[in-house]
Image 1 (cartoon, one colour):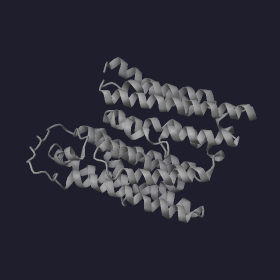
Image 2 (tube, rainbow, N blue to C red):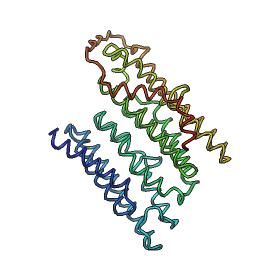
Image 3 (cartoon, rainbow, N blue to C red):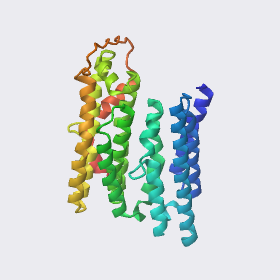
Image 4 (cartoon, rainbow, N blue to C red):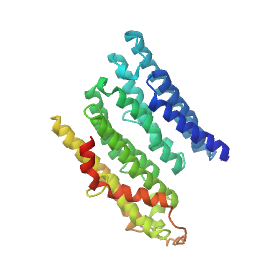
Length: 346
């Protein structure tokens, strides 16, 4: 891809996200989301492969429909209340439409069908942007409107997302699809606590990004797209593959790794809100996700694939791992001791 075109796309992504996050007016927020959608399309379709073009088309159609629904929601609210301010979304129909629009943009169940397909059709670096940076503006809109949203609807969407994210990831062999279903599952954890403690949703999103970024960058470094290639990639950079296992277990939420922190805080908050059955259900559903993370970790570090033919071992590279990847890896594994500080700020 042309460097100037890539620079323009990335700058537009920053601009669109900044406009949405900092705006108070619905039209400005909608404009920022549209800029984001148009900026990411060249990055999705840059390989000119039919699957990449298909992914870009699916992404455009879904995001355009969600943006139209969001605009319709804000116009309905303005019609009834005379308010264009994002925090003044009070009309029940508008709140329902907004929840639907943002769910489509994020890929919450039952509007999740586009997300694994789009992620599968793009490169790992573009997939990283789709799974992290492009989720931030819609989550910001949910945070700003959280007092007006329907808690029952969000709980249903959250439990369904956690269940389907874990269940559908079980039989996947493509790493990008597994990470897509992992993202859907984590969005469920964020959505369930949104109405009760919006700050905790934001902390969960930050920690999810912190754990997902090094996994995508590691897979991109060792050029791994399938479980079978992952099984033979350990010879390339053995230390990096070994830490990949810890990162995956952190994303699964096992103590004493960073990923345990958001799950612990959310279950504690749900118990405080007298939602113990919901907390129990969502905790049990996260075991589904744990299974496929363990499967990934098992393939990455412990086994060779069960094939009758001998696999040629890949050459070990002399390239040193980049500093920012190692920084993210450290943070994604070792942040749990900071939990007392998060308790005091939230």
